[in-house]
Image (spheres, helix red, strand yellow):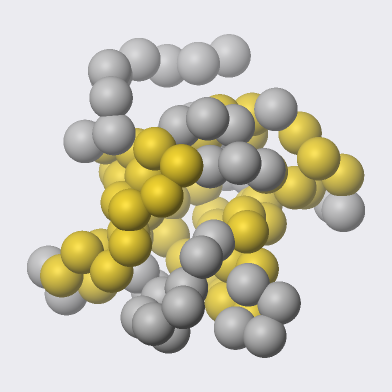
Length: 91
């Protein structure tokens, strides 16, 4: 598991999460979201948006929008996002 970002905003009604990336993220990646040591959500990334356009991947420093399932309303600002899988820098 590798930390790839932090949630900077979440819009519950439309299910959009704004993330500042500290690592790379690609459509199809599986992520876990943690806050205060508790796993809030595990989900596969189906779509990444930047500047209102769909992109296949994003890199460190990008601020992106993700659509995340949050039926139990656990996602919060400040939660950390971890990518599951192999370590590696993506270009």
